[in-house]
View (cartoon, rainbow, N blue to C red):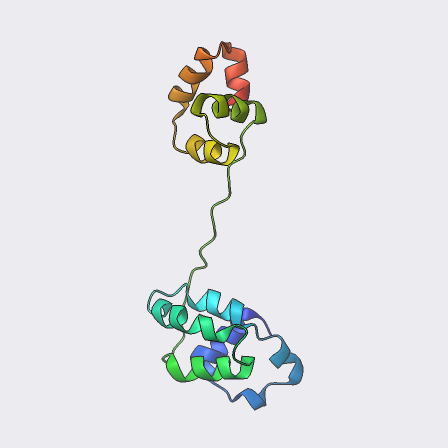
Length: 139
């Protein structure tokens, strides 16, 4: 069974846990279920409250039963929210910015996401970088 099948079972079918085969029961993951259900704004508080009990404390069948009992019956569409990918910066650019900001590389990468290209060009020019080098560093 896929995550989508499990979400449909919890929200639509609400079959009893014993009606699933042993292989299907093994594929039930409380962590993934919590993650997908939390994508629905109406379920967010319920999932947030229950997740501390659902992972490690309760058995998967208990988690399944609790969600079946607590959540309203009905098919829903929840768009999965992806995390942002970290932008990769040129290591030479990071080294220059570390000197400029006088902070760690991690903090510098966070700063780079907030600075526009014009400001970056000005900083690089202060450190004596020519136009060609600046263009290469800002790719």
